[in-house]
Length: 326
Image 1 (tube, rainbow, N blue to C red):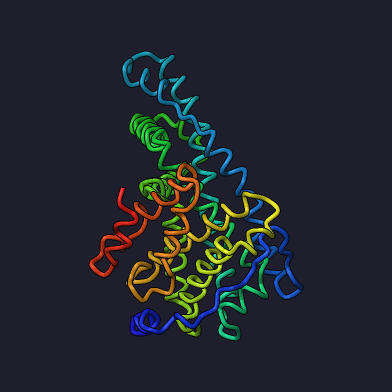
Image 2: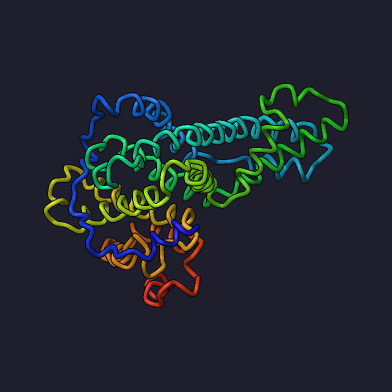
């Protein structure tokens, strides 16, 4: 704790975040390739996970009919046939979170080693920086979709009630075909109980990394996170860097990563991202967001408003609270 608090009190004004990370073209160097390949194997599925999550339609009508007419076997069967593939998708999403949980420490270990400064890491290991940025981007997108898909909780609750009822009736006909063990269902239930389950996975994994790796000074990890946020901010607000983006989406990618790091930093750091001497210039980040298209940026502002831990702390400057007031 003492080391963490010292990070917050050091003078950050002399740091230079005038750096460019080529998110569009970064390729792994020979030194990065082994870790990059492990992380890439996981990230290959991220886009399809997001597509499936965006297309998740649920089984609300079938469940409603099954509950309204409990003696109607046709409605019971229709509800099961509708819920069953949905639950298998939810299992797939959860298993992806476990894959992320396994590779995040490997990635952090490379980006936070003590032989280089945070800026040197991010400049010389751009492919790994890009992968961590892609994880943050995925987490924000997935959790935003989850928060706007109430059918997930409804489907999974109905599934668990149905399996429990069949088990009590000694009818294994449904349980045998679910491919979801009782232990797996319990873990999935805990996962989806969180409003932002992927962020919970990311923050818990990063906190565990900071706690367990005693050979790495904790300020290296926190400094790496703050440097990521500040470089993404600098790349977006600096016209010389923005002009190098070939795609408009790259600017929004930088903004989402900046927001993702602010949220992660706020979860991992005991004092949070909003404290006056935080390593992240949150006020400047918020001003940058406010200068963007209001419709596109609102989801990012809401992510900061509703998924951070320390926004309402007394240590958070009034100016920041006012900037985030609805």
